Amino acid sequence: MPTQWYNLRADMKELPDPMLNPGTLQPIRTEELYPIFCEELARQETDGKTAYFDIPEPILDIYKMYRPSPLCRAYHLERYLGTPAKIYFKYEGNNTSGSHKLNSAVAQAYYAKKQGLTGLTTETGAGQWGTALAEACAYFGMDLTVFMVKASFEQKPYRKAVMKTFGANVIASPSGTTKVGAAILAENPDTTGSLGCAISEAIEKAVTTPGCRYVLGSVLNQVLLHQSVIGLESYKAMEILGEYPDTIIGCAGGGSNLGGLIAPFMRDRILGKANPHFIAVEPASCPSMTRGRYAYDFCDTGKVTPLARMYTLGSGFIPSPNHAGGLRYHGMSPIISKLYHDGYLDEARSVEQTKVFDAATLFAKLETILPAPESAHAIRVAIDEALRCRETGEAKTILFGLTGTGYFDMAAYTAYQEKTMTDYIPTDGDLKPGFDSLPKIPGIQE
Image (spheres, rainbow, N blue to C red):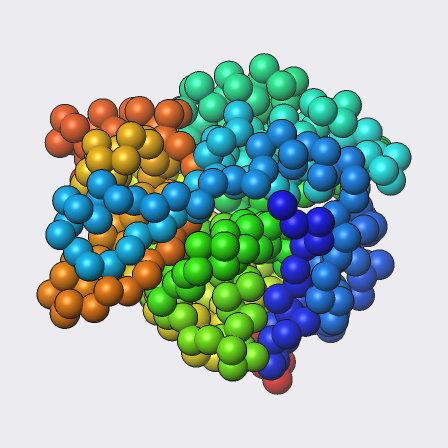
């Protein structure tokens, strides 16, 4: 298990563009983030030079409960597909939260506690992040308020129950408990919510509550830093096996698991040591990379956050309520966006959810793990790549991230089984309002 996190930005040829202060439109200074984030996390967010950060001992103590996570080979899937490819997956579901999210939740709760704070706020989409943070806050004795996207709040009652078990206060977003939530509801009373809405509410709650800060489960540089444990462990395990992946695949919503998985392999690519092929997989219903714009945008619907340059559908984009998994954020991590824009991240693919559940069901039958819908996006493309190897005869080594379990997603599995699940692909007209609402920044985007 690693004792340091790896900061990929330290080896990138060009850093992602800096976040901008929404008031001045100037690059944001570290101390300007202190009212939102705790101070150490703000420093990690803006540090593009330090390659390795020591993982504090209290965090390692918790990591040791469930890490290192297993790197597995999907022998049964390989045989079923009749492929010469070797398929490996890094499995992050061996903890109560059921996903990789705990890796950053523990770190963020620890730094908040160390600073003397008493509470945190956050948002959650499908519920994995909220669950992970509820666990971490319970461990460190921190209060937690979770604004959960209303569509998921209604679809996944057991995620709420787990968060409440760990002491979290869970609120459907948008809600009437914040000014920004009330304003969103006044404009659209029937909205099913979005991560952008929930972020706005969580930040408002944090900045108006003494001893409280906001934390985020994906997108941010600090989160990808913490999630680098996934890639570092994968890299070491591959080394022990005498293997090196030709193709690396991860699902992509905000970019946390993808960024964590690819970090040390991308380092090799940037430094010219190896040339693996990287594929990001996103839902066709929320296609920020495949159909989004590379532009500065707000990270939240209420437009109170700093501006980040990323692939985005516009901060007001609301995913279709029939979208069953997470991966529903309007933008993509600035690090992932920069790597994709500059050609280091080779491909972004969008897939329809019925095809995703085809892959999830097949994988469950063959490998005995019920995957989260988010993870199944990566499984879908891993299968496609393995079938391509069967056609070409190439014996490639494929690595994908299995980010978590699907035990709280049974309503979605039931909809798939009963054939009531449908695919939704937004039209260009559906996406246009989001693009039209992108902020005008003199000299950058006007």
